[in-house]
Length: 83
Image (cartoon, rainbow, N blue to C red):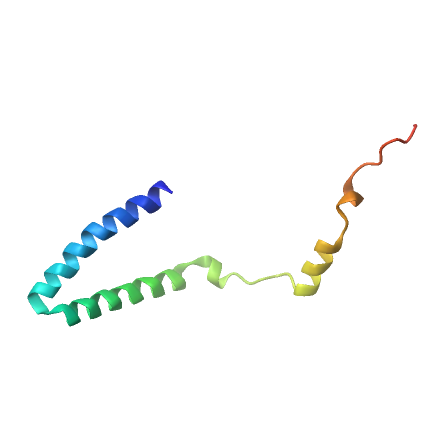
């Protein structure tokens, strides 16, 4: 949570100054376009470089359903037996 707050806080400060400077120099339409393009490039880089996207799923839906159908009491020891 602390890292997310830091990134969001700094992003608003830096992003506002950056888009303001570009808008002053080149116009608001181009500033928004450049910001949108940079955002898309960064998102695509995250998608491509994140290993979780490329990791194969090894369990089929039938196996997952079978695993969740087992009763919880099957793994508990029986009580009340006199050994």
